[in-house]
Image (cartoon, rainbow, N blue to C red; front, side, top):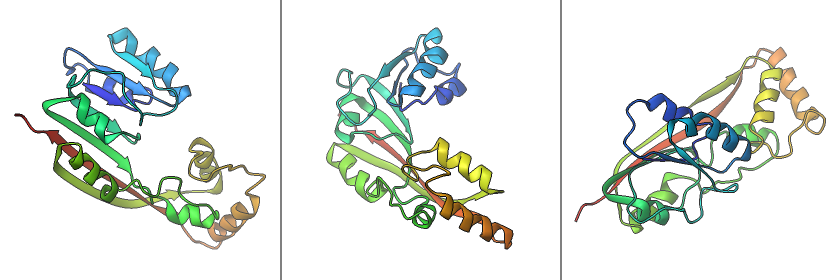
Length: 202
């Protein structure tokens, strides 16, 4: 089993002790690489530091993994198909490229990955030889109880509003504060999708 974009290894640890004999993980966000290694390597999981991106060629043999997981990380469809064993499954949950578009629009910014949609990835996965087993799309509301919690979120998730800071975006925050004081809910639309695909056995 391979976990692409493992973060701090939280998902894998939740699955233990139901691990297969071989488990590996990839991570491209530097602060998470150290955490993932601290959390996973004592359990025999090798964590690969992929230098900021999980979308390039992967350091694995052809058909090496029976299960490839990916939660919210970029990926190369051809590489996923290459390392997946015959009959193996690829299961990914992705943030839709237009998720939080209303929040970004309010801050006069644009999504960095607007192409990251099922319509983009499914043809690429199929062209790589995978068969789509399931596709599920979801949208819901992300609400903030106050401006402080929104500031914390935008600071922790810096790719939502690039270059965000309280100083540079004070005008926008003030307008949101006025909305909140007027009784308006600070809610924005988030979107997710799940793709399950498999590599057909010969």
